[in-house]
Image (tube, rainbow, N blue to C red):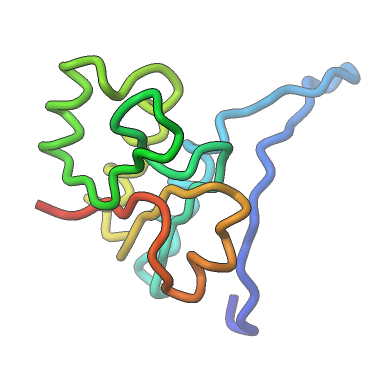
Length: 126
């Protein structure tokens, strides 16, 4: 970290008997970010197969900014569901713990996200 490298975490683990396991990457990444924030400026970026948090089934209808209150409202309305729930729960926990910023974007937008260009969904403190 002090040399300027960015950690990229892969959630693959094994059971000790030769079988690979898919550990929850969101939990691992958020936990590492929470542990690092006291020592480093910490940004957490979730890269996955969507362009961000979606407001509908339309892949291009990305919510650019999302507060926790808005997340709770959209969750209760069923707009945000399934695999996004643990991702966003972990992300907001990281913000509460002191991580400076959290962004969710498509993996192909990582370089754009790192440059500060607008993409994906940025989570906002209340």
